[in-house]
Length: 107
Image (cartoon, rainbow, N blue to C red; front, side, top):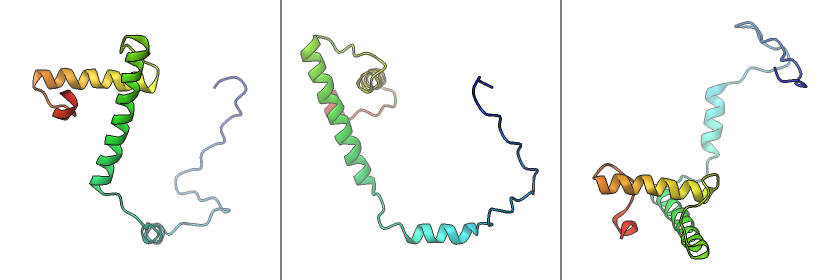
């Protein structure tokens, strides 16, 4: 245990219940949670959000390329992760393997 960390309290034995904690009616809780869900997320919404995120990162990469003359973005940044992922996907695309790139993004 790292220095300065308080010791962990002992775990209760299997079947032992803390007297201060009321038992939870899980099916009732699930029912309440499901009833309170006012919206559902459609596939189209998810695709739209993914496309918006991709376009944002792509425009950041274009700006980086214009500013620094290279697309070698530091790998520890979100943009660096995006650029690395696009390189992997493009290599799979060129090799004819399964990938996530759309043809219009390659063009």
